[in-house]
Image (cartoon, rainbow, N blue to C red; front, top):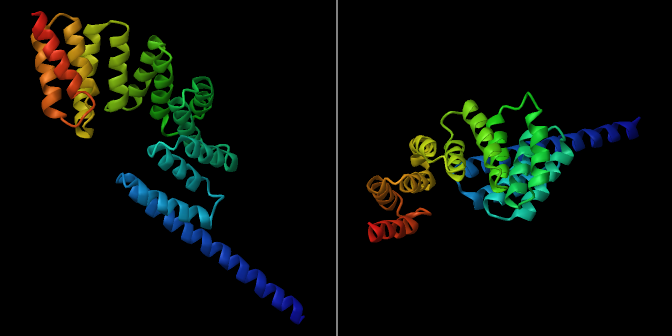
Length: 249
């Protein structure tokens, strides 16, 4: 009898220890998510690694590690953790969508689109606009601009104020030389992208105006890029375009 009592106590202590580790892991996970949301990726990674050490079989921990490594451009590590999350929980659709985005970044477009088909077939997935954006990005990078345009439109139907979807819808129109509609779409994107200091729709709107032959409006729009986004991707290109336009006037 004494033996069974001791065994029961050992088992109870073991269960308590396991439960305690999971609770501590969950706390580190939530801390990591808070840091991630504020773009403090080093601290987010620190917390997610602590969470993994305590509960390595938590698919949410693995997914968040994948996201953090993705933001730090450590793509091999990112892929490893997304795949681990899906190995643990094959129906974890958000992790599958994130894996597809990672595969696009690594130019593995065929596998990315295979994964995205599975994502889009999950009628319970609440982030469907993200899946359509990722599908559009894959198609855009493969220069399948008509397909990309349709995918971005579907994303906009789900989330009308999406900066990325509206920008790339406009850019898809630009790439097929439908400049008039591209200007409308890119101007719409500008209103959604300014708060995130994303200057791409501003720049391509100016470029579309130039391609349409409206040089004065084009110069004004390029000047806005320089003024509004001095630390962005496109001020130097905008200055070069202003110089070019003025030289040929």
